[in-house]
Length: 288
Image (cartoon, one colour):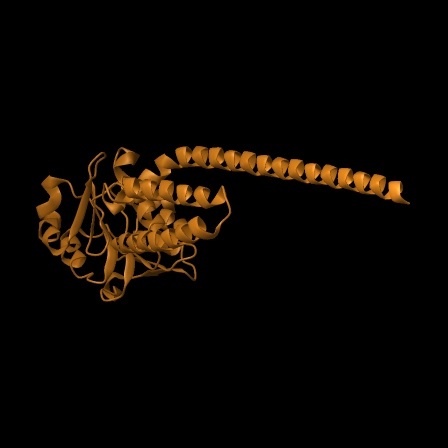
């Protein structure tokens, strides 16, 4: 069946030309949650999205009889296959992948006003007018083009900043900012309390740890955009782990020294008590 379909359809000579959208789809799936819409079934995108979206709702829209029959083979409870006439433009979609009829792509793309990410296939400059993509770009706040392979792939959004390497959700940026402020307030309070009430040397150890953490937070968070937070943190993690291990080892040494001092102090006290008892018994024997 598949061989018959392949013979009937126009297939690129190089398989890479057909699958240039897969890395972008993979990244989009990893960074979102929610329903996924596929406009135009394909031998690469439909099976790929089918297996990636096993725990999510996926709807593939197709009008070509051969592609429709092919996509139907993947239909499950979470993956439905429907004709183009039933597209739900107003529905909230986490991802919309557009790769259907040439004359409908640009027109349909701007209708998805409630989608987090819209991925467009075949966006090389010479094809943008033919596909209607030239009317799409101005409708979205963020845009990123992937031009390493052909056909080119573009991703647009009004809610997620896709212009940076990590493509971090703008809502996550706000969340990181709130976490940073909370960390500063709670950490400073604990450090002040520890400095006043904790016995030495722990009263100095806790504020030192907090100061180091604040410096790291400032370097990671303030000097560059918050969207690069996770990327920088991953690079700093080896150094943080080494510092943590060093700090733990030093803390253990301090505790061991404190225990030894305590034992020595106890042994001296015991010796004094024994001497006192011996003297007392000697004096008592003189008078008895």
